[in-house]
Image 1 (tube, rainbow, N blue to C red):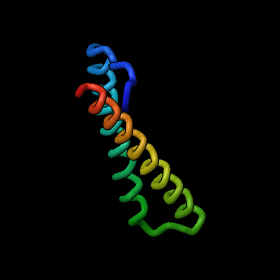
Image 2 (cartoon, rainbow, N blue to C red; image 1 turned 30 degrees about the vertical axis):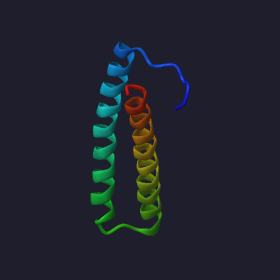
Image 3 (cartoon, helix red, strand yellow; image 1 turned 120 degrees about the vertical axis):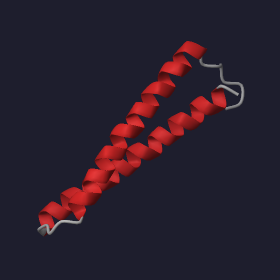
Image 4 (cartoon, rainbow, N blue to C red; image 1 turned 180 degrees about the vertical axis):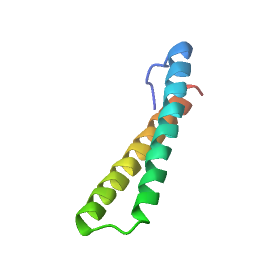
Length: 75
């Protein structure tokens, strides 16, 4: 992160907790989407499942990036 200012420890701790909780919620959505995708679905419904899957993967990626920033900020 270069010369970026450090995040105060109490804020970093809270953000880490929130990122962890967000990971749990995203994982639930991803698993539910996966299981829904295994069912017999019409084509319109499959499109919605794909939309949920793509959005949850994006959310997981963003959350990983946030966690990486928090990790590098504490070093």
